[in-house]
Amino acid sequence: MLRTVVFIMALTVGLVGVGARLAGHAEATPAALWGVLIAAALLVERWRYRASAAASPDDGWQKTDERFVDPESGQTMRVLYNPRTGERRYEHDTLG
Image 1 (cartoon, rainbow, N blue to C red):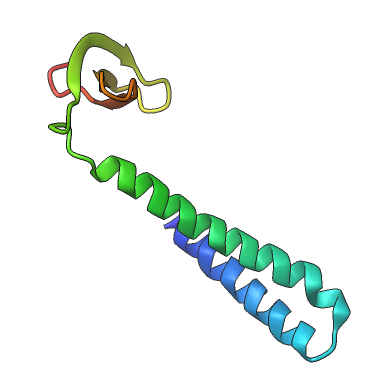
Image 2 (cartoon, one colour):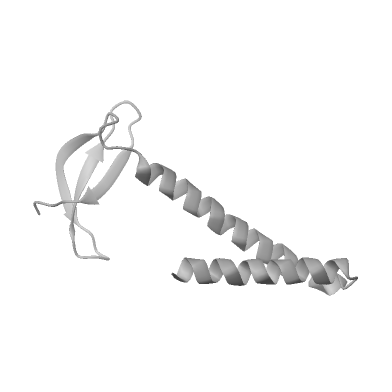
């Protein structure tokens, strides 16, 4: 929810800044740049992390015996390991 609000605000500031810049107001350049930059960063962030989270655990991921308590949520997390890439992933442990 917060990400959506920030995206809408950044896009609005960026578009107003671009419009003001096109109307001849040079002082609107920072608003245009920052608004567009933040909106683009939020889009890339959504795409980047959604793509990695959508990968199936069956794609070479192996469950390990390693578990830990996530300090933010307080939930027990399980560590998955992909021996092909060396990547580690964390998921909520349904047994913990």
